[in-house]
Image 1 (spheres, rainbow, N blue to C red):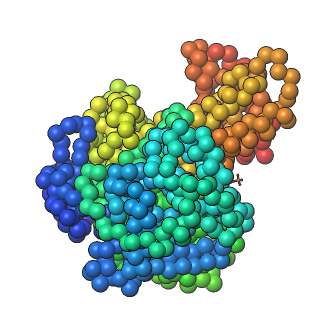
Image 2: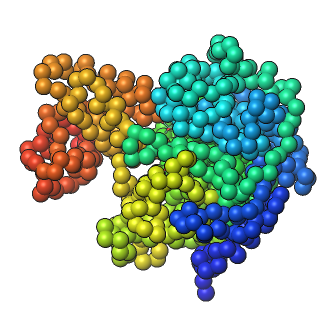
Image 3: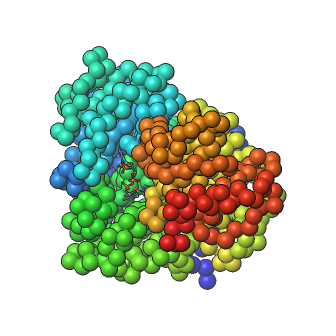
Length: 634
Ligand code: COA
Ligand code: AMP
């Protein structure tokens, strides 16, 4: 007999329109859709075309009207400021309505863009929901990005207004945000009319006359705004993610398909119910934060946790267990890197022992490959199922998972289990044919994608086709390589492009190479992601200097590090580089990044037959030794 998962998967494959129409029923629609999926203009599919709804209404007002008003909607827990703030659905709805009113008073209307560049404070979540309430399109930019990256997003999204704060707090370090915002607006060609700034007591920021408003002055007395029904196909947000070049891609999220998919996922992927406590320990700047700090739990009527801290150091590796106990967390979602950091500081799990974790039921990991060691360590120490699942900014929810709400399947460490209902995942070879079980190929999803996935890139239909749909016509290219075993379990092994995954953050080595190449002493360069015990991967630079340059690594490397930090941001974690006489290339000039990575990781490699000069690999091996690689070589 097929399992519940298998039966559900089959239904989503065979009758997708009925399947997703049923999933849309629990939400409130101001107008019902005309067609569940509009296939008229492939490859641009539109979910719930003709329907009108409001995502904020479904996250807040719907629950208030159905009697959940006094239940907690949001708990802000900030060990870095020693603060806990709680908002019921009533309170959060009222706050959001006021901020939405303040945005409207500044002329922000449905379809206008609002950039949110804020730390992990409740006002950031309130700002996102306030945009959704009036149909404005938010674009949240992660605080660890430098002004140049923020400027690129301002120019692409062309926001009418920016929401920001005076500072963020990184463990015990105050990071002023306002100077970064000012520098970004200075750099950008598009100039937003208005910025609303939350002044935090840790660092007050001077406001620019005529442009900046104080958050409380602008919002506290504002006339509350009602929800504006928008088309299901209208954009809810744009979220920029690293592409294969230095130019970020603006992933568009619609309102209707997104609300339906996320609502469905809360019950069936995560097994989380209304009234339960759900914690995604991520940042609102990433897709995990959008989907599972903000929209997913609130659509479901669950309580969500907004945590302004780290897994370690705020103040110790017991931080996660303290939050789980204090707020009765049922489900935790984080990146494996957080657990590697905890495991390093508290290998025996001593910090868990005096905590009441009795309400904690399931741990979900995503954002990077879950190494079996970390997965098993977490499961052994916590005594709860640890579920690896695979997804990306583009999809907004899991492509593959062990769907807890559909009956947990046996776990195979190293695999995020099987395709989630709605996703038809295939493994294709170079020639476009499906690979046999066990053999690595490109991981693709057969079109049309399920609801929730990107309908296009912001103002860039061509880029959408080129980046995702042109390599294998009829299929969406995930950018990941991997294989499927005989039982249909997927294994995600690596990227097929230049993206690396640093502490669960997706970064382009190409973007870092662009920065290094601008240094006046650099002739050519390569950046390669090498294995790191905590962050999964970290970037390492290899630089060939121009003829005649006499300065050495001791002078040039710190400058390169500073340039990447200033240009991309601290989040790139670019801290290691070496000067080398030559880069290893094929005869056609392609840099052999894969081989360099294997040398750095201490893995066996074969000298590629197409290499220009095999002796270059010895030079690279020497350079890596100088940097302490491979790590296991002692
Ligand atoms: N604003 C400003 N700077 C920020 C920032 C923000 N919002 N977030 C990170 N940074 C800075 C950090 O201070 C650090 O700077 P440094 O080089 O001066 O120390 C740098 O960016 C890298 O940050 P991070 O990747 O967080 O590394 P870390 O060494 O501070 O912490 C972990 C390592 C594993 C504890 C951390 O990455 C973590 O908690 N990860 C959890 C998983 C996660 O959030 N994944 C996201 C997707 S699910
Ligand atoms: P992002 O868009 O930043 O969420 O990053 C998505 C990328 O992270 C994916 O394309 C994968 O490369 C990687 N990733 C996410 N989850 C997993 C997982 N469970 N296993 C392996 N890789 C993952």
